[in-house]
Image (cartoon, rainbow, N blue to C red):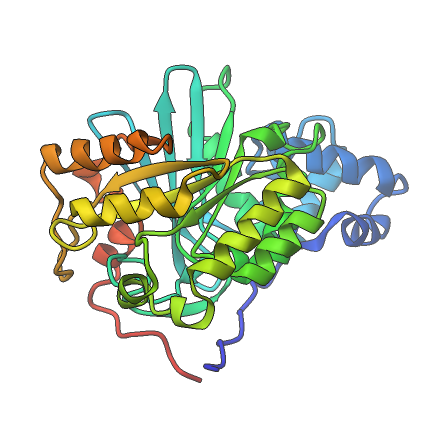
Length: 362
């Protein structure tokens, strides 16, 4: 296995990076009421949208002047932002070690959905995805995952809040499950962002052991499995990690997830013109999922420079959906968001980092 490079932390750690107990410990040397100060500081960052200590008006003035020498409110920042014609906002987030990841803010009626990343790059090697072209550099820490939500939230008017989270950005969430769950526990806490656990969806290529671990965690988040093919030969061609698992093991884990959580599993299926969008593919997928408590989210391919796949025409998309519904398999077609700003996963970062070499192997 390739050794991931060490993370270079900033000179001053982030307040959320420290965690509550370590933050209290640091503050105990600066203020006689460290317990209160820690709560105030966290509340300002998580709920008050503060990005500077000087804005935290209920902290003593002397403490506010000292804190910048010890801490930073956030370790991440927005390096670039683009807004699509449909309102979708895509952010390139710069981490403390200068790596970047993508975060997307989407608008749909009264929904404010944020799509977050869990890794710098991706090691799954899916042949249709821009995220993994350069491989994986490292896992994100829990505070880096959480800070994506905060930076996206801070883009909203003060009267609006994040309502939904989809973990469908760069990286394989199940490969960084512990850090992801730690970040989501704060995001879904009333003392954090107050997002309902029912409005959180975690997407995965399908790692059976990790799906079972998520089911056992007691967190009732929604699960979306990137299936993308109805049989193993084609899936292994599109998604090399399938050779280690196989579709049947993934379906068995998904069934166990539903049994333990009561949450219907969504199967994501990217439609590649002339590859997996044929009538026989639709019929095979219908047979595979018939009788299961499942929903299929059909995703017409977003063209990516350097990748050989094409988007199917609208007639092929409609036929595929109809074939599934004939077998009473619930299906929908995902609306295309932010196509004019490189909103497909990994595209914005790839464009900004195009001159750079692949990740170091050390």
